[in-house]
Amino acid sequence: MSGVLATATEPTDVRSWKSTDGRTILGRATALTGDTVTIVLTSNKTVSFSISKLELSHQMYVKDHFAVTEEAATKIADAPAADNKGKATKDKNGKKGRKGGGGLSSEKQDSSEGSFYYYHVPSTAPASDRQAIFWSGAKAATGIDISRYSLAAELTGMTIVACGNSNNHGTSNGSNSDNMKRNIEHSMEKLKISAKRLFFAGSSGGGQRSLQNADKFKSAGGMPIVAYIGSTSPSKGYYYAIGGAYDFNRFATAGIAKKLGDTAIHTIVPGGHGNKDSYSLNDGCIWLYTCNAYLKKTAGSDELSGFEDRFYDYLTTELSDEPWRAYYWTNHLLNTCKMKGSNHSKFETLHSTLEADPKNILYLEGREALEKLSEKYMADVSLGSVMGKSNKEVNKAAAKFVEKYGEIPRLKQIGMDLQKKTDKLGAK
Image (cartoon, rainbow, N blue to C red; front, side, top):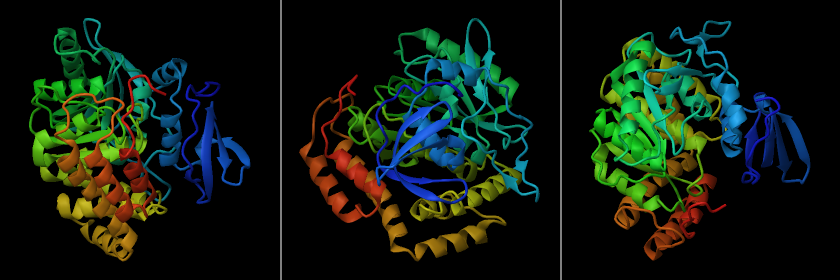
């Protein structure tokens, strides 16, 4: 990305930024120019430094906020492919780990008859029967679309595929399905993807397209983002629907989870329609991977052991300043996924340690309360877009939510954003 100027001009919210050496600063990121991020501290002092000095999850937050130009996408797409041998990286002590450094390298691959896709197989991927998530956006995909998933890809070993010419068009456009079919068939052979471990994701109209793909190709589930379900009836599986708190599709996204039932959840994130929230994109991939791997038993013991080692390190290092998130995940693995095996005891010990902090329990309860709020007050309001409108019942429920869970900054922001009018198409 060196020399590429970011296109976004709005600064981030004030937040805590953690460096790779454990130091923390508080402020707003105001620019990303090439590999240099600029942050205005709460003291009004401005600092600039290489983005590589931030922890990986914080790097991805910056890169997602300051969406880069098509020139950057081309550079990423043309970069050499990563080591695709399906083996976890190891440090000098032989410990399984994740590759450092921000975005994923990717390759463009032509399948047939003009269909093409970009892909990345992480170094942690198994040798065969790989799980994959196929991205379909509102526009033709590029290599930049898979860079958002670097954290989840290395943690889970999930292969990321961005389909170049299956995007935001309705069911009447048959070429979308034809392109996707060719890309799936080609990538399954080339990338060793399992038909039982295939997920679809997409944003807005691309999110609706992802649900159509899940229906047509009988997938294991998906991740529709700021999307709507329409008349589509996706196959049974796990679905992680992501909706912006004041997005004009927020009611429609809530409706996705309600219609799909117990194996689907609606995760509300701060912001509106244009927010591609890396926090939840990566969380969604991890949620899909774990539900499918543990509950459907699609992963062998060696694969699960490798994931658990990497994930434990992630929870105890990169989430050390957000222990409530680590508590959410230990609860998910132990109580939802019913994990077993040699790593069970250390996750159980970590869970018990985290449970001693009431703030961590508050976060988990808040996440669950948002799901209930979504189903009770949002899911039945509208199946389509509702622009520039507020909803009295949602506002009232959100205000009570902030009173109870506002101690957690992210939950407070979501509750405040739910009380805003929904945004409009093309609004800044």
